[in-house]
Amino acid sequence: MSEQRSYPRHVKTDAGDIEIRLMSPADEAAVLAFGKGLPTHDLLFLPRNISEPKVLSAWVKEIERGAITSLLAVRDGKVVGCGTLVRDPHSWSPHVGEIRMVVSLHVRAKGVGRALSQETFALALGAGLEKLSVQMTVDQQAAIAVFESLGFKAEALLRDHVRDIDGKTHDIVVLGHNIAQVQAQMEAYGLPGAVQH
Figure (cartoon, rainbow, N blue to C red):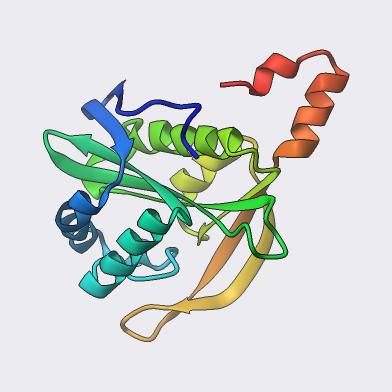
């Protein structure tokens, strides 16, 4: 899936130099430590709790199976972010991918999330997907802004869709990006290179 992008890639951010690389089974312990360090609220917009060892094991199996591709943002040997592209070629929506992304609290608003979301988006383009979705809680304003800057638009609001450990429910917003439609519009205006990476 990542044949059109090579990793690791190095980016300069306000949080320092970040290495973005593909997650492998050897990263399980480091990603678990990252997950355990996240505020509980941040875990809500991921379908599963990545601070649980059994969830990490299943995640690694999905990577090995090729069902998902995960990118890690690493600073000074520690995982500070993760962007994942999920797709199911055997579903009714083989042309659709879902992006899941989370970044450590201490590197937020410093360009790490933006770099990671751009790389994950580039992976999706390289995979030939036609549509992408991403979901998060409605109060994740900075994350919503990052994805809107990539051309995503709000498509759905799922009320009381997730429940936190205290039993409180939260709304989820689903953002979508119709890659095929944007590419067709750009080609119509003579700008096919604008969506290349």
